Image (cartoon, rainbow, N blue to C red):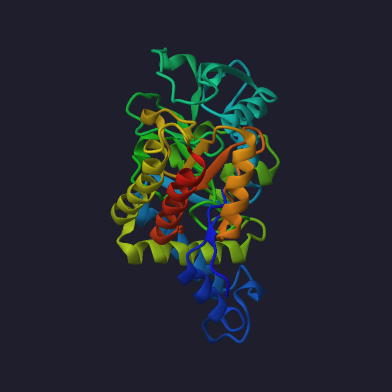
Length: 361
């Protein structure tokens, strides 16, 4: 089979070992004679996958017992609307820390439901950096929303020490499970699975249980977090195959040594590519400032559009997939999620060095 290096931003690379196990079990899951996709979501075999996936996620992320783990559909984009529908009542204000396009979309959706305010934005700097957070009165906002990693622009919060609010919400779609996070600092964490957790189709929501007391009770059942908590994410038919693959990914992460090992590996992978950028005498220009660089999405530009097209064309010939930047910003982007192997990052580093030697003078 042709060797490729998959740097797609999402849906993204899945661990080879996970895909091989899914392939082996595709037609006969647990000696049942049928695929996991054919099992009832109310049956014992699927329910064991469902519950073990929750248990593994709690273990790997050190999620306290005071939190619920939900597996929902609709992607993170549904959460943009579902969160204010559940928690933003008349006369209340939600605060948004805007660090990229997904932050903007989250605020725009919330503004259709309730009052919102931008606490700080990096837009004037073209989202090249995580902006310094001004002091603000916590009691002014019902909740505060932050995006932990910005897939399009390649910036990431190194830590969350500067943010303090009793009801902090984080969209962690593109860096969840890539490093240790202080779950107890957040009221809600949500993440589409298609970057580090598994395939597209399932969204993980980590919700502090006491918040349900504040939730709007006057919602359609499918849009209420309380519904999904009471029904263990089985209110309606869940995306069973996506959750099954998520379960396999979590097993894979655990087998590698958990988040300590994953975080170290991700730091090493990103370093290879950032070194190629930093040692190119400006031929490659990183979009993000060094203090805001993402470990998951490495964004950079070349001196002009013609060179960018040549770079991407030659990269494709060499087996590199998904290196074009997002259509809204152009340039290049290498997404180095958990399942992207070290080998791929070393190969990209070597290709970038070679391309610089050929075209940089």
